[in-house]
Image 1 (cartoon, rainbow, N blue to C red):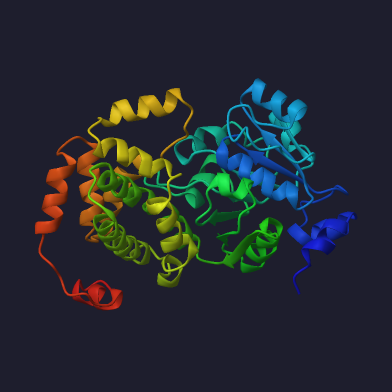
Image 2: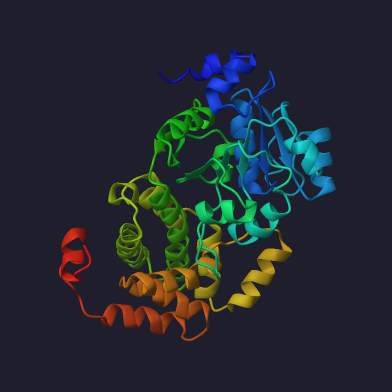
Length: 375
């Protein structure tokens, strides 16, 4: 049976820790290392620390480490929140990883390969990595379950956490939920209990592909939802884009081996709703600025200068279109987003094209695939 979280916190023997996460655990205390001190890295670090575990955040910035350790605040991200006392930070990777029980990876996907390549000799082969990074690699089209072992040059226990979880809401302790997937359902269940708490529900899953695809593709749709809002088109237009975009997500995820029920849950439509309708979404904000007439280069420059965080949908969109082409899956809304980001057409014309496109029968996904001779 699964170990109760409260009991886990009281466990201090190495045998107890081994039972929780495997034979890699040798120390008497459980330590968690978080890669990345951006908004989501801080939210994940705070979430785990609130559950009673010692957390060390690995950051590139000396001033961030100093602020967290001395003032219990991150001076660049979510600085309005006081951090738990058992949350520390360092710029020293060896120190961050010494004796760690597992790693929470919150580095943007496009930067992950080079980052992990520099860390592979410091990460123990048996330490599970829980990735929160969302997207598709722009050049290779890889997802995190492929990038992590390739970067480390070996197999590594990995899991993937995704769902409608804005960092600010997690910090504010508002009720939230997510899905955690690994190929080993027992590991998913155990790791899910580490993240779960009074205001966080984490559902275990084996659908590694579906959870990652949902987390990646919703960012593409969110950009267009923002464009519609920036154009002042109203909630009807946003609902149309989001709903039909969800259908495209389902098609591609299932074609790649994901499960339809995953796309209908927190890691799919749940994350899509949050990103497209919530005011805090980075990808939606990029779309709003594009809808208001700014060009992409200008929008990204302004975001970088103000440390507003990476909008993964910008890099994911061209990769999503290439994947859809590879799997022969119709995704006209994603293609529309790609044309917009490449500057091939303006938003008003693209939306006009969408409204004038042929309409197909509204049928089940299985019937669609049968019609495409794909199912």
